[in-house]
Length: 360
Image (cartoon, rainbow, N blue to C red):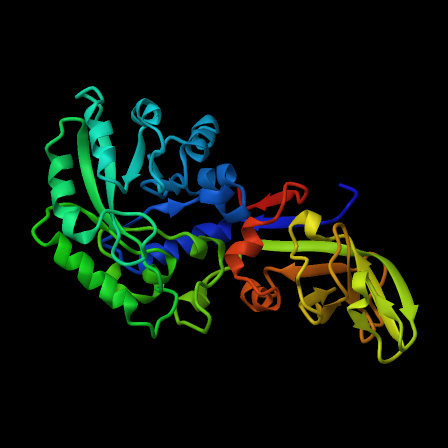
């Protein structure tokens, strides 16, 4: 590998984070969410590493599920967005996919399947997020319709939280209570908890948790939290300094001259840019580690390169290793400097960044 921009993926850390999720509620099961290419970590490799421990995986859509099957993953796979067209249903049945269901007209489409279909359906309630889901007042009727269908082997009751990452926001309790009232008397497993609910809302854990972000070592919270603080970073994004120059006070760096030196400065050019998925809008001062020492990005991120401040690091120079986030620099610290969240930083890395795996 010539260009040294790369992402190191620690599969042992992902396993440890999955076990941390399970430890929050030992009586529950945890479906490992590997949508969006396992949040940028590589879904097939992550799923292969977790398959001996998980009951099932979760993805967004059938294309992601098929890719896992073609890679040899045999566990059930939940389609979190459900099916979009009825012609997906025979594939779902054949491949042992589980499907979310969020609209009552989809029940009619399931009823058209052969009676031997044996479909596993996760019936989604809109408890307040207002993206997908059956309204609470219609939920029990939808559940009973599904239970009456010979094509359906199991129904799981599910919903999704809007504000679980805000531990002081009472709306999560409101959603839990709406869900409880609407499902009273319905005999079926329950799945509510995403990563923040798995870590911070014990009353939401129920029968089946759905950890996603936390598997990859980032906290879903904007402040310290006792369980989230145990997570192990799974991705370390690295590159190296490919050029060094010295500039005088008053000289600027990069497109649009967004940073100007106020003292004699050493500037390092690094092989990393928005073509790799690193945010163009990262601010001046965004932290990085250079040979393990803290420094900062200066100037605007361009497509293939960015610049860092070497002024106070006389030992750093050509070939120095630059860490953008990972084992030694929390992605949760970096994300606000880019006006975004860890989810975005991970999932937006492009295919130009090779993933290098440890812990197979």
